[in-house]
Amino acid sequence: MAIVQTAERSSHLDPSENVIFQRHMIAYLEASKRISGTVLEIGCGEGYGIRELAGKSSKYIAVDKFHTQIDESLIKKNNIEFHQMEIPPLNNIASNSIDFVVTFQVIEHIVNDVFFLKEIHRVLKDGGQLLLTTPNKLMSLSRNPWHIREYNPNEMHKILETSFNMIKINGVYGSDKVMQYYNKNKESVKRITRFDILDLQYKLPRWILQIPYDFLNRLNRRKLKTNNNDLVSTVDVNDYSITDSVDDCLDYFCIATK
Figure 1 (cartoon, rainbow, N blue to C red):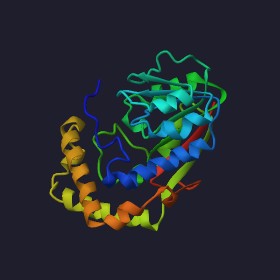
Figure 2 (figure 1 turned 45 degrees about the vertical axis):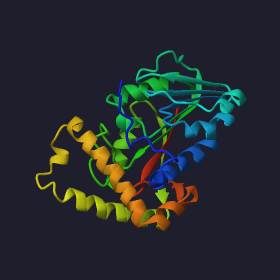
Figure 3 (figure 1 turned 60 degrees about the vertical axis):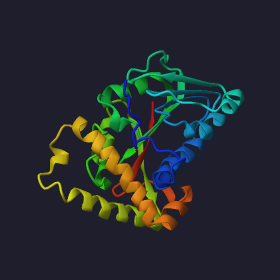
Figure 4 (figure 1 turned 180 degrees about the horizontal axis):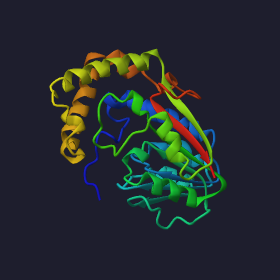
């Protein structure tokens, strides 16, 4: 069981997280237009997606490796279950029992991504859909040691093909305001990594880099917020869109049907 909750777990409670938080929210809003029936969310994180999606389902099963405190008012209004467990496998989730699987910003953390997708395929009903997001490797600014791997567009399609035949990959894009933040972040990351003359970020084991990366990541986001408050604080979910182009998207929004 992991014991560190990192900057990977975005929260609306930290103003410096706003740009990345809104980027995550666009995926949930898109999912809310699609889901129904029994929904399984893998990697529910802080639980903010549950508020967006639970009301659209007849049963909502949330899974995360950390405990997630779900609002009691949501539980009273909706049929919600929470399971704390490492995945894969999807223990205690019956085969052919799920209408939609939602898993956002998770697969990049999974050691055995092929098994992960196989398990999702197993629990989905025939005609059921997987909704998945993950970062576009082509737009990453540095190595993220919390990620096992990231995918370029071709790799994204190939990994989904290990379990699914019907696949649609869309992209999450940001407005000019979001891309202004992205470019400021890019400049800031360059200033930090210029000291890495031996390219150690790509050579050292991930576990050595995780805590320094997490510290610098949080510090960088807060510095960007301090220096660009009007920009960071005014980005909202409407500054993001999902289209069928992928090459220069920030994240993939994948739809795979069983």
